[in-house]
Amino acid sequence: MPTHNRLSDLKRAISSVLSQTYEHWELIIVDDGSKDGTHDYLQSLKNEKIRFFRHETPQGACASRNLAINNAKGEFITGLDDDDEFTPDRLSSFISAWQDKYSFLCTPVTVCKGNTKKDHLFFIGEINLQDLLVVNKVGNQIFCKTDELRSIGGFDKSFKAWQDYDTWVRFTARYGTGLKLPSSTYLQYENDASFSITRSPNRLIGFNQFVDKHRHLMNTSQIRAMQCWEKIIQGKWIPLRKLLLANKAILKYSILHNLKLIMGR
Image (tube, rainbow, N blue to C red; front, side):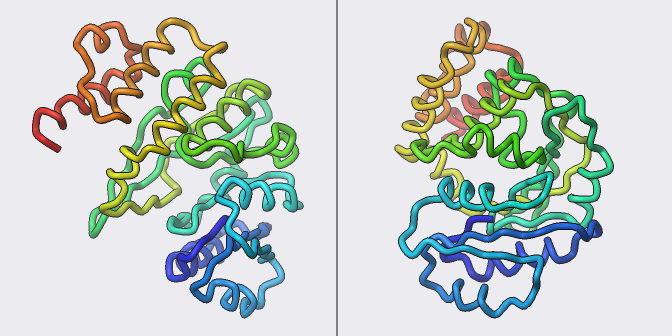
C-alpha cells in the first residue's frame, strides 16, 4: 500500500486489512514522503504483521509499490490504494478460489461516491491477453504469486498514467490467463476530481506510452479500440465509423462517451 498525505483515508484502509477474516497476512505500507503526520502514525502502530518503509522525498506510487513488492515475504500478493478499502472476505475469497491454471485472480469493484455505492460487475470470468489489449478488464489490483509479479519488474516507473494496465498486460503476456471472480470485494472511493483526472495531460501521455510499448502485440481490432480510447481521454467525439469498426468490448464505453458529449457532460 503506497500512501502520500492521506492520513484519514489511510487509517480506513488499514482498518479494512485488520478486519480480514483470513488471518495469515502481512501489510507493507510505503510512506511516499508524506508531511501530514503519516510517519508518526505508522510508527505508533504496534502490530507485528504491519511493516512500513518511507521515502523522504516523494518518488511516486510505482516506486512505492515496487519497494513493497521487493520486500514482501508471502507466497501471494495483492495491492490496496490508501483511499480505498477491502471487504472483510477479500483475502479469504482469493485463497479459496485460487487455481494454479490461472496466473492471477481479481474481482469487480464497488464504486463509492458520496452516499452511493454501486457494484461494477463487468467482465466476469477468464481474462486473457487478447481481452486486455482492448480494455483493462482487470481494474487496478490483482492477486498473484509474489515471485511472478517481482519477476516482471513490478510497475513501470516511467509511466505517467495507465501503470496498472501496463503491468497487467506484461504479467498476462508472460504468465497467461487470469480469472475475475463474480463478487466485489474492493471498495473504490471516487470524488469530484475523478472525472478531471481522466482529462489530465498525464492521462494522455500514459496512454501514448502504453500504445507505443504494446502496439506490437495488437491486431487491427485492438488498435481501433485504442483509437477510441484516445478520443475518450481527449474528450473528443468518436466518429460513427470508428464505433462500428471497434471491438465490441469498447463499444459501450464509446457510446456512453458520445452521449455524455451530447448532454454537455
